[in-house]
Figure 1 (cartoon, one colour):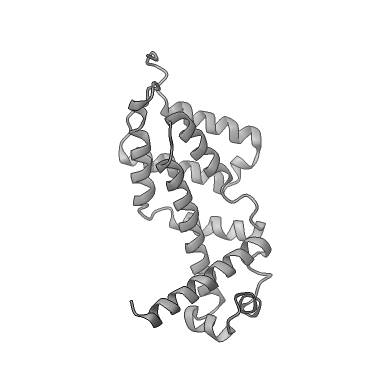
Figure 2 (cartoon, one colour):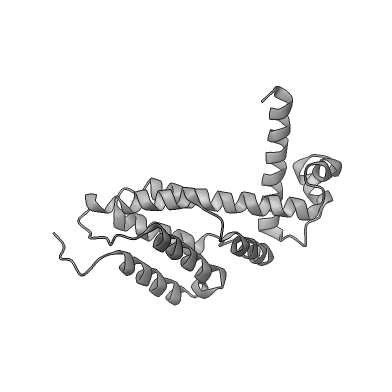
Length: 191
């Protein structure tokens, strides 16, 4: 990548991050291209050049946001020091990952995420598999699951979150406990 391409990519990333911040705080409908251009300190023509229209920018922000939250989940799994603590952290993260977002942005992001659920999320699945493989190093017995079952687990948890089931703190704790105890194999005696 030459210097011009690097500057162009840096400018695109900057605009995406500014738009993402504004959408999270104010929602999509309340923000227009001129507001975003002003906040990013670029011309509105630049935004149209990169994304064609507001819908193109919104789609790019949704993809960027989903990539960001996915990476945060991967980081949680990859840095887990012990299995049970890591499991608690990832379930809590999944249940709360859109907390603080504008309600309309969250709704749009959830709709976008639902449309993306069929995509192969290799990073998450690989990290989840590595994380579950940590269990033998702990004294906690863990069940073995196929890749397909792990996908269903992730999708089901995201479905519950995207449909608001985990917004109630009591339900969130009980569902989290349900998933946690489904992974942990309490039929075996602890060492």
